[in-house]
Length: 287
Length: 313
Image (tube, rainbow over the protein chains, first blue to last red):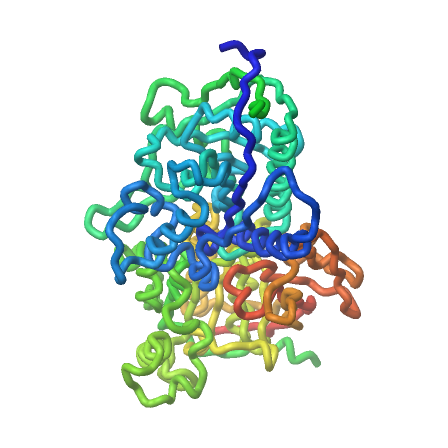
């Protein structure tokens, strides 16, 4: 496929913006609250090219300002968990994942929302990252490129988790397209104004792109640097207590680029950073 | 004739405790105390019994600030004198146990010095927390530490405010010392923050050893930041926060905040300015644990305290 080939894809009439999937990642929590306020006011406006659902994913964890109540909500979206047997004693987050699947999915079906943008924060110095399961979802790649262009002063990276659709476990896998927008560094339980503002801008530009796309705009193809997850590296631990016995070295603590390269140098000889061709121009399909 | 020429004779500080995990998710103290409980070589000093101790083990295990209630607010006279029992909140039971082992608070049997190790998400650097401006021993020790780590900085926060002062774990001792190092997220261990805390304790223990051996410490002045006022986030009628610490104030702990300076930024981008009557020095800016305590930051005023010379009695 050539970079200049024009690819037509279906419009994205329904988009979901989710915050508070982890209740102590506060930029998303406060942004969702703010967007819900604005949404109430905009109800009388004329028909939009896209309908946006604003969702507070884990209300109980948000209320407690904890990552989760019983279990990590963002691991509860595998097909097995969503369709498994229901019980009264199910953990809160499993009940919630099924509610979210009914609201935004069902995952894998034609009724699922077209795009899920799930908002997260990290204590790591990652800047803004898009995290997806696919390295060839043209919608996500084009949105990422659009944000890079519109917000050039924020370091932005595209991370690809090579997990099959069958095994995908996170909230963003419920929509036909989806990605997590992860921004750091921000401590849990804290909202930093610069981080909040970056997230707000990211969501705004994403929605602007979707409106443009749905209106028939053509987006030129090009190249995106993608980081592919290679391996999780744990801390050294005491064999008996499992307590950590070492901390991240000061040299590694602050260099985001170094993190991915060093990770791969320890485990694989080849570099993990690939340059992907977005091998298509993109526009809505003429249906 | 100046009274500063008199040397105060103080009892030696033999029994010293190092508390970690008073808040179970403040990892530097947890890690250091666990390290020293396994191998205490580093904290051994002649004439000093240094005891490392995890104050809130249940919170440490869950990696949470507290289980039922904040241990570092729990050492009130009411709590310490309440009849013991399982119905008491976990941290109140803990406070009673700690008071028994390291106190009783206010009595001659109490430990001489307790260092209580804390981390903060605020950009406070290394901060020593003083509870009384009249504690000569602590003032001299803090002066010693500051000089020892120069040019690196270690500031002193004095919380003697009658309303804002609170009943800390360390208050059980005759000479309570808070050690607050940030920024570090809750539940995270940053090696530079960990090392900074370790170095401060090394100098603190050196001071105590020298003092116990009979060294005289001449009169000195110590710059402190005295707690003045607690400033909450702007909230709506339902108590929800409606603004964040302004980007100009974020991370600017200890820098002057003048009337008219930006202070908060609403979620839709408006600036709220500081309306105080004079320049203050804010600290504990955007500490995660204080959202629920209605505190965005605390204002302080700079002051110079004089400590007379001290020597072992």
